[in-house]
Amino acid sequence: MIKYILPAIIIFLIVLFWEKITEFVEKKFNIKLNYIVVSSIIAAIAVILLLLNY
Image (cartoon, rainbow, N blue to C red; front, side, top):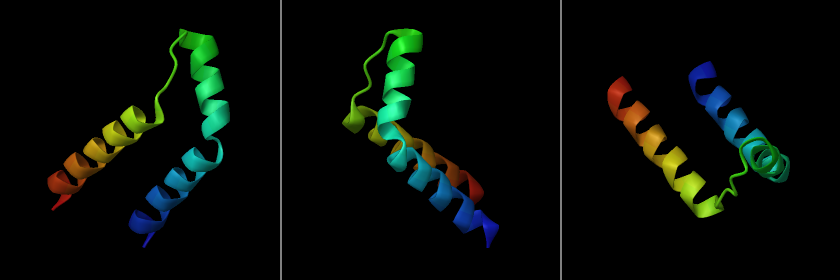
């Protein structure tokens, strides 16, 4: 059960605090994050992890 709830909570928190995350990354690393690029990378990582688990 926790296997499904924990990723949902993490994704919810990323969506909720997206502005603060982008501001932090921009200040720390001087990189402006593009929402489409970051979401596609996260989706690719999720697909890879799902394929490794099953």
